[in-house]
Image (cartoon, rainbow, N blue to C red):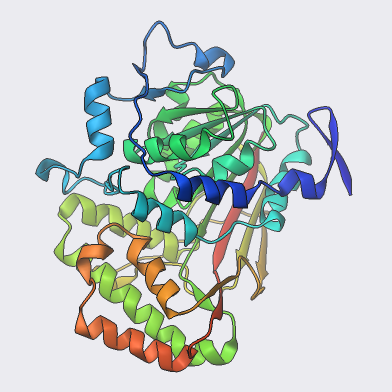
Length: 404
């Protein structure tokens, strides 16, 4: 099938196929993520991206860091004062082994998945000028969007993630294509013109935000007909029903043991409150996010593989009660799909261990190497999986809506 995008006729395959192998090669080949970069504070008279989305490869900050301080923040471990912050992703950008493993063990968002979002968007708007990747992490989604949009803004609350994203993307995309913003999703509308964006996406990020403030910010940024898409994937899930019956409980046990240590033992009150908000959002399969019909139209909620578990952590790991909420509006389209090939990963036990090792920074210290109880669980998994690889799929919730 052929479609017209930005005045060019391209195939569906061309539209949705970012060169993943090249991206992964650039990830693995980076030995240092600490090169010097220019930092300009938000509000500087030299910053003009708010009008034209034509930026230099710089970070526009919501706090007034000096260049020295932000570089140190990106390269060093957190201070004691930050240990109870909700911004807990404090892995130094110089830890290349962690970041290489982190990206390589994430699920591969497939071309059919992005097609859902692009088709939704083209049904309401022909414009592919500006997209925002909110909570961009290491830049996987930014890379895909940059193949379709004239300009992509990659934003993050965490300065380390923003450094990592820029280092991993800059070989393929210059400052005319991708710019970077250090900001909470709830605050983005303060830094960009109203009705300036065509698409806003948030992967794994909505449950970490105040959804009401985030929706207000996104609604101000989007043009009429613009698209909001946010999604969340959960635990790796055996695709084979027999393996699922025998081994999924073992994976869930590993998940619970690690998260329980991080949440119950290593978190203060503020961080636990953030974990509660995230747990309730995940447990609700994103249905807790209300899409007001006066602002949004053509709301479409899709769930894949609901036999799996979407929350990374629930009551057992949290140690406090979790409430679910359904705020799906009348007239919204809902859909449930079972597809055991969805975002498929083929892993042996050692690769599964790699996934857990970098799933969350605290895991490497929570129940780490040499823990006899944890190793015994992996031994049980080896008995279930054998010496070969098993297919894993993912439970996923995707929400899309168009701005009126």
